[in-house]
Length: 565
Picture: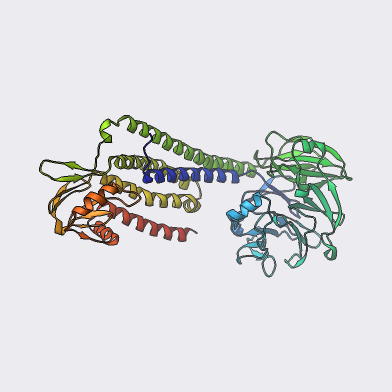
């Protein structure tokens, strides 16, 4: 077990590990993205809209299910930020793809300020004012306005003025109903979230300052602080729920959702009109409340983790769940998809465990079959007729056989996984994000492992001016020295060749090649590595076939990548 590991074995194990971990991360991440109910929105007509993933579920004033609105019909690829209704029934939302990069997500996780501009990067992305029934949309703002990260909004029902908390840029924005920019405010804000207008004052959940900030909504003094109130009672501190994100006016009281540091698993705290703490709403274990909305004399609380919407009396006592056929069906769909992605993630870990176990078992078995003869030189055997034979390094050959075995296990394990993912999920997205990278890795490394393994049966015999090549299938061909060509990577005759390996992935002992093989080829022709590669391709040698597969596969993968973007 102390023998050096062949580079090809190491690369294959690393690639397999990264592939399995990549699939696990992808599946786990996709499962977490499929949460339960999030936004709760009241329209000017009094209808209740539940936002869950890329869908709005419409209910009438009595809570009866009316219609399911698929937001992809409006060009929304993923809901980012809030959705609000104008007095005429139009909705304001963000269209286009999720343009956040890995760096953007890292910055958000570290709670660093978003440095991306608020101007739309393309005509199809950014804030749009849309009609849910007709599907018609028009750009919000003549130059295009975009918040490609978290944001909340409040639309004044009197004059359609739009107030937006630009969460990751630590700012408030004010716009007219058509998107004309009216003002900004940044002083004293850090990750502001939900906005509420009450008595001509704008209330802001100033999350990272652990307060509700009350500011002026007037254009000439927009954002000027009037007062800030502490909304972290002792009960919240003890529960580590100190990050206010949502608030709502319920009668003469204020209800605030204080989240934990991961912006999840919050608690609902009730304050009187003077912001004195009164009570905490009793939520079920594991609850992750998001939005709050007074509706039909109760307060609805969306629960992302538990796939529920809680009904709570104005005194804070929880009654049960808000239910509707549309919500039930969508939750069932989401639960099924979530488990599918989670199964993919666990299957990937199982594949990784299988590979590691296989590697250990194979290594132990290989170690057990070693004998003392392995210590004897394997690269040169002299016969009575003075023919000198050179064979592959047995240690390298054994490692290449191990590589081929692991490669076979990897292919057998990954192909069913990829088919499973593409059939049960978004075919285009799964192919682009997961299948294509894995296929590219397999296309590059599997042919290399296969061709190297095939060459472990080869040998080179030299006697005077004759070279005998035993090819990858064991056939021997005697060739006059003058008709032999060679390079650092192979020795070839007109119809047969022996692959020696590359410098870092040598199949034959490199020292033996340099000191005993090449010096004997005095009458042979030395050619370039490129010419030798073309010779191997022309005669259909496994190494040539592998090179063609890698080049063609990479080319086709590039085309597929461009088409699927």
